[in-house]
Image (cartoon, rainbow, N blue to C red; front, side, top):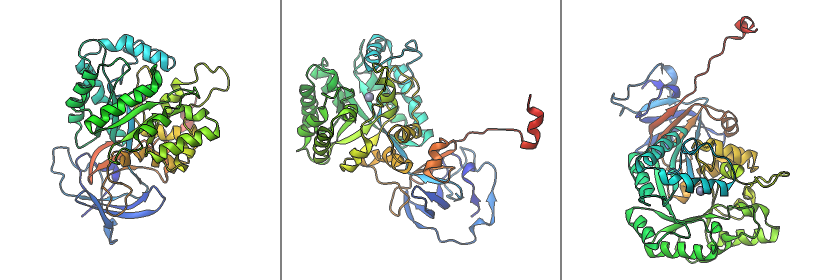
Length: 435
Ligand SMILES: [Zn+2]
């Protein structure tokens, strides 16, 4: 079997083995994939005698002959899980007149313009985001979906369900139907019947946050599903809905998800209150989902000096034994004009603004797999044959360089690739280019 270079891989190609690949912990290994799992170490031999250079296969050619890959110089990362997205809002920033401002401004803009969005538009935008995510190495997305103003309130959910079907087997999509204070109970029941996986809400925006938490929990209990709430997305230290969420769900069985997204106000709690909130969340097995990009953008507009970073205290959350995952949140909408669905950018923010070491940041970016019940994908024997190959020597280098070349693998098969070609004149010729 000739040995193939990663850059020659095309979507559809099955992989038998990765030779000399670097794992996230820095170790170099040979990995075999069998039936969608990591089967064991490579038995090394005279594998590197031939290298197939050039395009491996046209997409319509048979690709079920598994290839051996010379992955020296490439790093195998667990795939990212974007645990907080809004794919029903994606790519609306230009459409809505390029707005700017705080969370309140963005909510008002959405309420003003969102009513004009048609189901087909929402589905097209949702597909575009899932495509960007897949090519970036994101193979699982939990998305919140609003009940849309104007016309059918369930058209956003229908559009996202359609997009989810299109990406089945490529990106696992979990849908959170997110109600507001004024949403009718009947509409929430319709959303559950249509196929929403979880109940969502934003209690800190309500007149009665505790009532909203209890309402969401009651819907989840009656349907036998979980909840994922926008929780304390504010720099007001009086907002500590995380504690109410934990108390309300502490007796739930393990299979019922309870997640708290954002938790921004944890950043401004005195140490004793922070410890109490984290203890309560840990005891109730509430996972916390940090969304650094959107919160860096949305919070702080009313702090002309010493602007806070608006991230929850990541190390304290991890030290409390809480499962910490992360989300890209908004993609080019009024809540973040610059989101792009790439969790590498999120990991970079967890390092630069959240002070996690790079390797830890990627663990957080991949931790959503655990929340979603997906098998681990670390390259260990028995793990899923899933991962993202990036051309880098370490996680730090991958994040620093933003990993321009990526190969996304699911079940031992390449499902997406992306590469960036740049050119520059050789050094000895550059003097002629200088002005
Ligand atoms: Zn959100």
